[in-house]
Length: 240
Image (cartoon, rainbow, N blue to C red; front, side):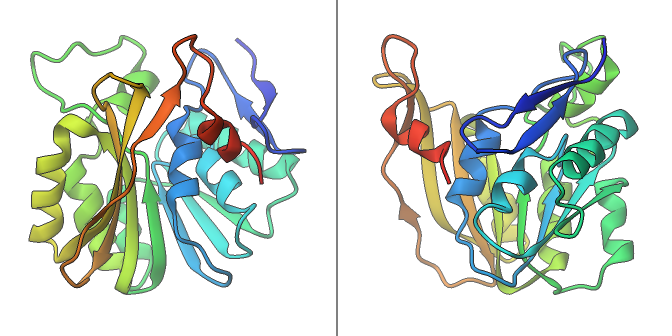
């Protein structure tokens, strides 16, 4: 299937290059950057950037330089084309490299913010792996796992800088444990719910390197009304 160019929902004049044989950008790729605390002139890196939806959204709320890191060449090519057609090459750089190699290319304590929408599922012999390798690497911890993401981020983030993650709620206790192991303190958490009355399936986490103890749990984020339409809060996140 050929690549297609889609609108990045709600963001005027922003386009994203996708290929349905791989995967399309997800709602959490909008929710995560809108959860970040941003200012101008930051140094930002997005790990597991995919076809770059998170850098695209971030670019609308800060003038900061943004680096996206994507391992899979096919997806990296989509990201590069996405940045090109949006004329953001002077703001966003996309690197085709293994996340675990990033620390060889950048100094420690050099980033203000690292974002990541990582593979959600552990890779076990019993795992139900998609036969499409590109999809399976995006969904399962085949090439990089949660501990890798957190330990690498700890090295790259400045003191009191932020790591902002979106992940499965069922793995929250593991995330907190790994953050503490790496001297990262969870400062803000927001639980995401598919609909009112349903269990949370995703969680947004903002953790600070060597941050002081003090966790704020934000109000729940409900994504859909009972008829399946997006809630007003989610629709508002689709706007600049």
